Length: 434
Image 1 (tube, rainbow, N blue to C red):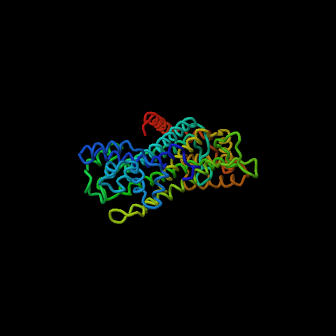
Image 2: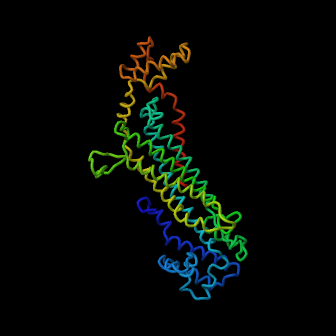
Image 3: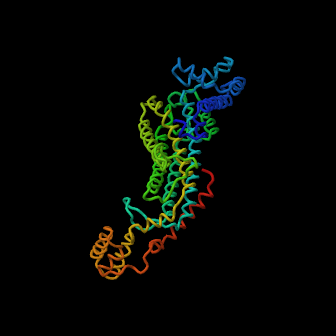
């Protein structure tokens, strides 16, 4: 991923330095377990344990001629070791015992960062939803004014969607927190299963249930699918904010610096550029999820078709998801909410948004449902033309508008929704661990 959309903590996890440090740690853990079972001599274990991870530049130099990253890593890692110690490195293993076990560890840590960013977004959404629970605005269906709602309820919808997304990502994290140290085709031919158990326990992983030569790729597809759904949830939030920032709407405004410039040509522009960026990043997550599904089917015990794809889609998806969630939290936290403008828009149709109130009152008073609908619709159609307020067009048809016309009648039965929101806030505050 280009640096523009990567936060430092996630970038560090996927750097070559971190990868080769983790590979070296796994080689040490394997040697420790094998030494405990009398395979690797104690002196060799001491040398292996004290050897520093190789420099990425040296691994790259050796890979140019070997065309095999693990063998280049092993050559660089062992080139300063005495031969009697070096010969015990990687004993009985195959390349992906190291690669996939390290990958499980990196995915575990990366998901932790994503979940932390998501938890922060959930918290700020819930808090601002409570803050604006009674900030009245017009609800829109098909982009057209419908009935009154509140901005707090809008945010609460998104908060619960984020909570569901985090649950999916947590489940997917469990699915990818696996490793394997089982040899060339997963039969443990030259490595004791106790070695695998030791290594996985040290890294906080679960051994693959029945390995081939690799960890099953449906696990990674599950993770990227969960990230893609989470990205779509963020996109829904960002799309709402984009619409609400349009000039003719202007109900909210995303945070901007004092030096903000929206256009190189038009100094007046205040574009929803952050929200637009969040929508665009969701497209990457969806595309990468599709590629992950393509990687599930490998030939026999393994092939290499997935490798080049994963080098791109795994780090990029986690980097994008992390950046997207953290950016969305910052937008919601700094969002300017224009309650006065919401009120203006609520009244823009001069009472048309209360048509359902008039219609149901007529039905309740005894009028046949279809007739009541058509009478109110006729009055509404005349009001749409701009000739008169909705109340006037009703009276012209011999219908007295409801005595208490206003949003309050639409919003009187939401106490149970607020209770759910407050429970969500308590739950979010109580579960710091992600």
